[in-house]
Length: 115
Length: 113
Image 1 (spheres, rainbow over the protein chains, first blue to last red):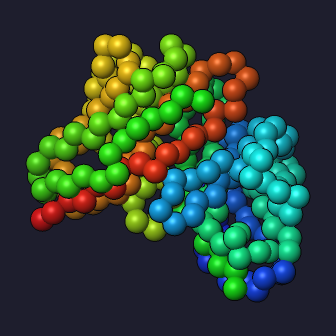
Image 2: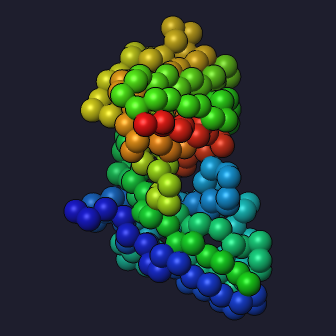
């Protein structure tokens, strides 16, 4: 078990471009979460999957953002028409489905810089 | 969602104990108390959690007040590697809850050699 992995680790893009990030969770984990973290702040929840079903989306997730987890394994987060305000660290986490006391395991994050 | 309050920053000396406080006066009876920490340039990592009783694991101890309105994360002997932001988080155990983590700004712990 190598933990949660995220690719790429860093992404620099120009405003208006589309970007896609990938998250590979721990293999037996049913739940997968995306968070966003800006400088000096704690991570903020974006969205959550249980297996392949996307069960909750934060109001932070505008129409430009879309996330998928097609086979209940890896997940992708796409941002269309990026804006400078999208610059942040995007974190992925996974956990077992039950019980709710189970911890979430985080990946190292993808740092996005929009110029 | 119930809120937590933590000091913005704390300092400790290497090999000394550290007590990191957290106030959660609006905690409900079905909220777990979780602690995560985030080392520089890494994602958060789980430290410990508890419901009512004090808890110990290899990383730390969690002392929970009798009324559950506050808790303290105890690092018994701080090392330089413990320098991180520590987050105190309440997680509900309601059926069907997402169990997303709601982070505050945490406590930045500096460890001096």
